[in-house]
Image (tube, rainbow, N blue to C red):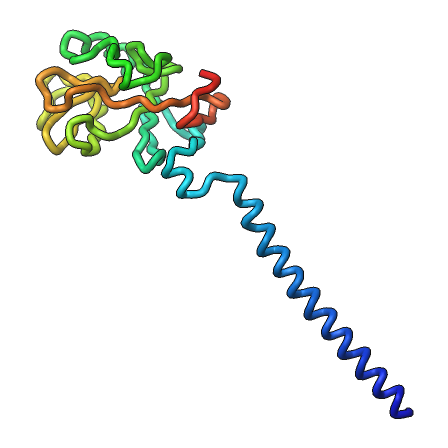
Length: 202
């Protein structure tokens, strides 16, 4: 085999190696550009913290259960109320600070009702006490319990200073919390999908 053939063979091999290497680097570079571009379509954690709307899948939420999602760095409760829970709400009215939810800053207009909701079955509320910002605990079981009245009908208890809220997140009288828990803007994308932070279709 002549020296020129060997040399050409080496040159071809070197070219092939160089082409493969540069193609691999190019592919990696393209991937590095595409991944951030594609991920930019979904809100970043920073955007969510700043107020971007978040979706909640409520398909697995059973009657009497609560789930929590984060929106703007705050816990948002979604409670699926039973018919029995809903039936007890009006009995609380005489004992509440704002039973008809008249303080407009506490909820959107479409939640200015007894259930404080779009769909009576679901309560969507920010789980932060309006007194000093503690997070109330679930007290869904009715009846006498520590720190609660004997005729308790279910709701929430703030363990820090004893404020109590019913299952519409309305505050009881003579408690440190001055107003009801806040209802965030929200809307239903479907029967099983809830969007928290936007209410354009509400």
